[in-house]
Amino acid sequence: MTNRKYSKHLVDGPHQAASRSMLRGVGFTSEDFNKSFVGIASTGAKVTPCNMHINDLADTVENSITDAGGKGVLFNTITVSDGISMGTQGMKYSLVSREVIADSIETVVGCLGYDGVIAIGGCDKNMPGCIIGLARLNRPSIFIYGGSIRPSKDNTDYVTVCEKVGEFAKGDITEQELIAVETISVQGPGSCGGMYTANTMASAIEALGMSLPGSSSQDALSESKVNDCRASGEAVMHLLEEDIKPSDIMTKKAFENAITVVIALGGSTNAVLHLLAMAHAIDVDLHLDDFSRIGKKTPVLADLKPFGSHFMSQLNAQGGIEPVMKMLLDQGLLHGDCLTVTGKTVKENLENIDGYTKEQSIIMGLDSPIKESSHLRILYGNLAPEGAVAKITGKEGTSFSGKAKVFNSEEEGLKAILDKKIQSGDVVIIRYEGPKGGPGMREMLKPTSAIMGQGLGDKVAFLTDGRFSGGTHGFVVGHITPEAFDGGPLAFVEDGDKITIDADKDLLILDISDEELSTRKDKWVNPIQLPKKGVLAKYAKSVKSASLGAITD
Image 1 (cartoon, rainbow, N blue to C red):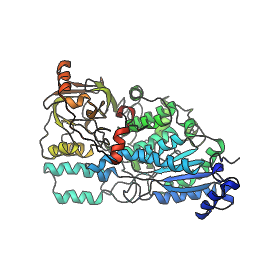
Image 2 (cartoon, helix red, strand yellow; image 1 turned 120 degrees about the horizontal axis):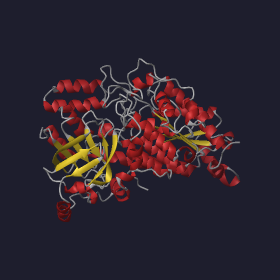
Image 3 (tube, helix red, strand yellow; image 1 turned 45 degrees about the vertical axis):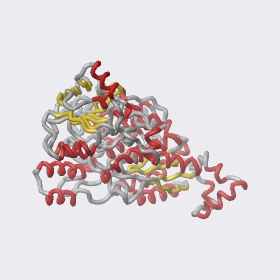
Image 4 (cartoon, helix red, strand yellow; image 1 turned 60 degrees about the vertical axis):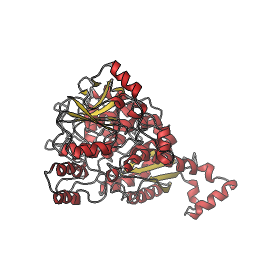
């Protein structure tokens, strides 16, 4: 039986003749009105390599829906580029785009009565934005990842260029050498190639059950990605037939699976922010402490960039993330009974998956992990009473004490780093960059990459109420809450204050007395003036704490 729960109200009966006439104008036939309508939300655009090919994938998806007996209807939503806007005021719009994408998908599908939805995303915020939109609508849905870019012939990528800027500032390379790396490192379609935020979220969504098995690691330009799109039509029609909705798939246990896989792959800190927001959208009770609980028993297994040596395309050649998931499942670290968009459970999807070859060196065995517990640490203390998110792999150690050097914007902090004013033992603090105070919670890839490029990655710590690119590595702590704009303790730190980060005890401590902290709070005057109009003004008024996922609902 065809599932036309929503489209029937749009096109059935003589009183809807005018609606049908408009649809005939865009190519609908009389036969189409008896089919399930499937909206295809494409984030295709030529503003970034991540998304430049996605409209082509959307055409394949539309054809697959037709072949499966449905009626696909293509529409577009936006994308922005973190990589292009990084380190500029434009980056304030990046996290905002997650909400715009979710809102636009909900708006179009809600308005036009689509029975099911397939959303296709590429760059970082596309993926959680799409999932949030699908969750709100709660109609049979699938997410398709646009795929990963391949590294250059010299094994470089976008993050390589960022770190080379630090080397240039230090005087280790010439401008010509910098431009030479710039010229070769990003060529053609696909999202950034390491286990950065795009590939992290793609993997999380596959583990969550909202994309087809094997889809999260595929190269953007590959037959396997085209086949993934071809398979989506039949898959979404099966979901429609069985009335399987996101709420049936995106359960608490499914989110626990996603967290487990993110940790095993050494994924981005942004996963914490986005998974919290995605869970909120589907009314799943997920908290920061869930990441700590799961992290205690989940090892880091993947030698993937930024702190490892390999790219996602190399992991894909070894079988992608399914063998990792099978390892975790067999060890009792995944819930095998969770439903997925195949209509089967995680266990059923993985039943015939073979393990990795012995020759590969990307995924370690459970008996020889890169790190025995999570690299994503949720820190608390008098500097982060509502929590902070650290990305600590152990390569730079697990604890750090040093003296604060405080900056009230990313621009101020980056200038100091490039001017070589940061020394070994410093704790660089960039504040007033939170969801509200930014507004927009900018990523700090440029300053952290400059630190790495200057050879200070194990000698300097970095704290912010902003967030990090998935390409960031080093001794970094972000998402500090309450944020400085809201009068969180980060606002009261002064140059020279001693700060201790302890990722073994999950502590973030400002070494001053409670009395001194209270005195500073009483004297504090917020230096930030928020925008009065426009997108950023609306966002600042509605956005909640990073500890809740920077949600706007």
